[in-house]
Length: 270
Ligand SMILES: [Zn+2]
Image 1 (tube, rainbow, N blue to C red):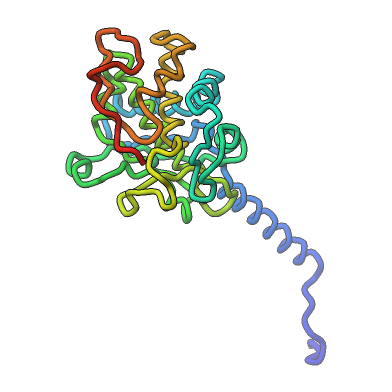
Image 2 (image 1 turned 45 degrees about the vertical axis):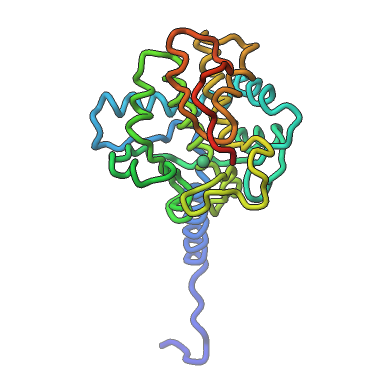
């Protein structure tokens, strides 16, 4: 018979089992929510045709890889110079070193799923939705790209193809978190609800997310031999550091990728 005045004490081995279960569960939970994506954990909407899935996957992996290259770093530095860079809401006046730190160690890339938008979604969406919000719960990013971007990547002209790299790299920056647990975006710009950046004079400095997109695009063009390393800054100037523009097909006759009269206008300054 148990003594009613003596509280029940579980045997020592039960405590050990419980402690072990908590430790294993805790470590795997921590591991799950802090998982780093180096570009290998990218999935493409499985309902798309297999060849399109393969192409989109190749484009995304190229985008991730480019951000680690010396050409990319040179393009960033050449384009931004000593100017301050708008990085995110928490860092409106940063610099290229901080941008690189967030991309190469400090930031955490969320595992990613690529989805192709339907034509009606393209008409109504102001921006391509990218990761972020859902990361609060699932720690997974999602990028929605319009069919036009997939078509660019599949084009024959290298400059047109490079525009897909620009868009993808830009959107990938929105799936980088600088906090290990809760998703805290490393790079912010605008969205449909907030079309302007508060506390900023439009055009006052490069916006990191767009600067990164154009730098990756131009680094890819240098790697493919379409432009010289000395043309990186001129190339980033063409594609801009404050928004996407319509210049992707303006170099299909092999023109130098630099400003010239008659180019489609740069985007509205942010
Ligand atoms: Zn953006």
